[in-house]
Length: 233
Image 1: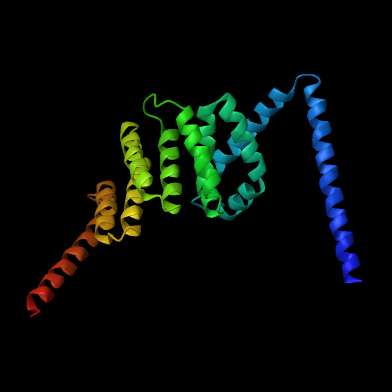
Image 2: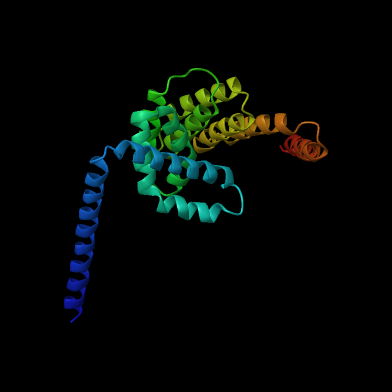
């Protein structure tokens, strides 16, 4: 009896897949007849791009869990929109892919993310300050880092820092510092990682009382460490 049930479930699933494929094929033919395929693809890509902008803006907030589920649900739509924009508007594709990289790498789509980013960056010429390019370079650097490809990741981190400086993008500079610090940490250089990150954070928070207190605590710790090192045989 269990074998019969599993066989029935398998046949039902196969029929659903066949029905969905037939429905998609009929829809494509229906759109192609009046020449509306490109128009609908543009509208679809525009809607998906707007969704990724909202997800990126609200990621560090209470809506994060909902957006994570939403982006996971839209995965096929994102790929379809990215493919369409790479062929019609590479700059828009660069923005879209950069906005969903963090979602994708957290979901295990490292190879797919890297392929899309490398293609989009090649297609979009570096025409001056551009925050979308900064985001895409940071995303590519993160993806390469998580894949263990540290040499190219380091080059991308440097390119991200330069692009962020040219665009006067403070958040991009912080992301580049984070990426360089992460690379140092993964390669066994924790002090170098600390220097990079503290250097960037120090410039962002210098002069504020909350920033000075940790500095004083670090100085006290260094003096204590110096005393311990001097007392050791």
